[in-house]
Image (cartoon, rainbow, N blue to C red; front, top):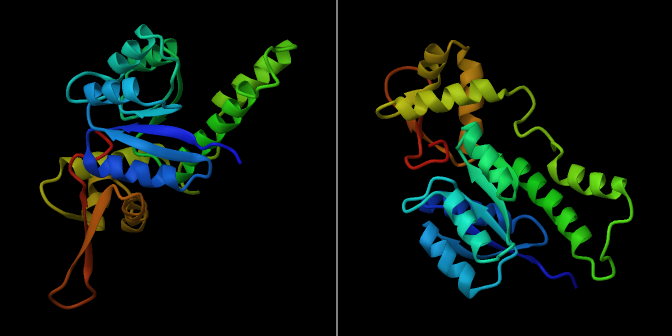
Length: 234
């Protein structure tokens, strides 16, 4: 029986932490053994428990995720880290890579995207922790290991959706005071109502947006959408 990969979720937003925990639980071979809402809490947990993988937000209330990684390395802990974050600054990405962050997944992301990252990590971990294997025989073995870990997986978005348009929809929802209809979002970003609704429904499926229904007047009820405050796109 294969031992599950022990995961610590580090995320200050309680809703997102619960969502990440649920998503990880749907991937075979992974087990969330703890959730931390701050860098300090994460470091205390890591000092007390054995953890294989940390799913780490960069923006934390008491320190950055990079500070958490630096503290881990300073203490001699080689725990693997996957960043789940909205941080798009190239300096942050470069620093994360230099400190040994093995994967970097931008919010908002789909379950398929996270699952792909985790499966690739599991394959990599299986290769490097096999008891009978203690050395690399050839350059192609190194290349294969790193390619399997770093190579792009399946598209993060459903067919027909683009990252740029999704980002525009998210910005509009976050800037809004109250709820918006698909027509209002469409007008704001310059797409059709049908297109805007596809993106909005995708965000609802990812539990990043709340949908409600407005009744009244003639005609069909109208769906309204609002960004979950404290959501992933900070």
